[in-house]
Image (cartoon, rainbow over all chains, first blue to last red; front, side, top):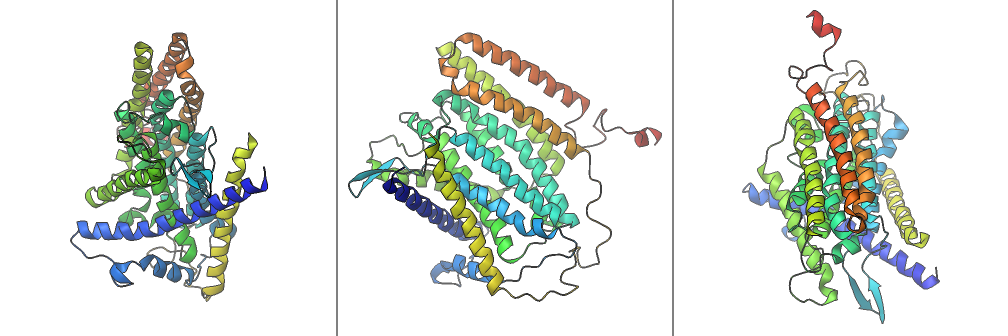
Length: 332
Length: 134
C-alpha cells in the first residue's frame, strides 16, 4: 500500500471512531430526553443549554471516580473485562459503510473504512466476542448478582444470536454477498424489507435481545439482579460497559437500515454526497423506535424469554429461509 | 486481498488505545482510598454469605450445547446462501433435507422438554433421582 492510501485509511479510522464516540455520547442524552418526554418529565437540562453538555459532564465525572475492585474478585479479569466488551463493539464500525462516496480534494473517497467480502460475518463475530466481555465481567466480580446477570446475559445473547444470524440469511440469498456495500447496492430500486418483512421483524427482535434492550433487558433487571453483570463496576470501567452497549445499539440500527431499509438509497434521485444523510435519517428512526419501545414495554420473565427465542423466533427464522428459497426457485 | 483487512487492524489499535488512555486518565485522576468495607462484595449491605461461584442451573449448560449445534448449522447455511442464486435447483433440495433433519432435532428437543425453563413442564431431562423420590 502506498503512503497516500495509508494516510487515507488512518484518517478514515480516526474520523469514524470519533463520529461513533460522539454519537454514542449524545445517544445517552437523547435517550434520557426522549424517555423523559414520554413520561411527562423534563429530563437533564442543567448542564449547558437544554442539557447539551451533559455527556461531557458525565465523562468528566466518570473519569474522576475511584475504581473499586472487590476483594474477592479475580483482579486481572475484572479490570480487563470492560475493554473486551467495548473494543469489539467499536471494531464493528471498521466494516460498516456510512454512505456511498464523496469527491473531496479532487479524488473520490469511499465512505467506508474497508469493504471486506465477509463484512456481515465479521459483525456477527464481533457481537459474539462482546458476550465474553459481559460474561467475564459477571464471573470475575465474584458477586452473586453479577454472576447471575452474566450467565443470564450470555444465555440470552447466544440464544438470540442464532435467530439473528438466520434472519439475515434471506437478505444474503437475495443480494448474493456478505459485503455490506454490495447488499446496499442490490437495494437501489427496492429495499429488502419489501421482500423480507418477516426477516426484518425477526432481525429487529433478535437484535434488541442481543444488545439487552427493553423488553429483553433481563441481565439488568434491577428488582432481582441489582445491576446485573456490572453491579461491582464503577468509574471509567462502568462507563465502558455503557459505551459498548450504546455503540451496539447504533450498530444494530445501522445494520438494520443497511440490510433491510435500503441503506443510503432513497426512492427519488439524490446526489451521492447526500447519501450519509439518508442513512443517518433511517438509523435515527430505528434508534427512536428502540427508545420508544423502552418507554412502552415492560420486561419479559426469563423463562418466557428463552421459550420465545427457541420456540418462536428460531422456527420462524427456519421457515423464513425455506420460504425465501422456495420463492426464489419458483420465480427463477 | 489482505490489504482490505489492514484497516480493521488500524481500528483495533485505535479502539484499544482509546481504552488504555481512558483507563490511564481515570487511574491518574480518580482517588484511591480502599478500605475493608468498600472493597467487600456487594450484597445489599450485609456481609456476603458464601462464595458466588456455586453450582448454577444445568439448563444454561444445555442452552450452550444447543447453541453450538444450531450455530454450526447457521455457519453451514451462510456459504450456501451467498451462492444460492447461481446454484441449480438440486442444491435447494439438498439444503431442504439438511433443514428437515435439523428441524427434527429441534422438535425432539422440544418434546423432551430441553427448551422448557419451567420445571413442572419439563418432561424428561430435568427429572433427577431427587425428584422421583419426592
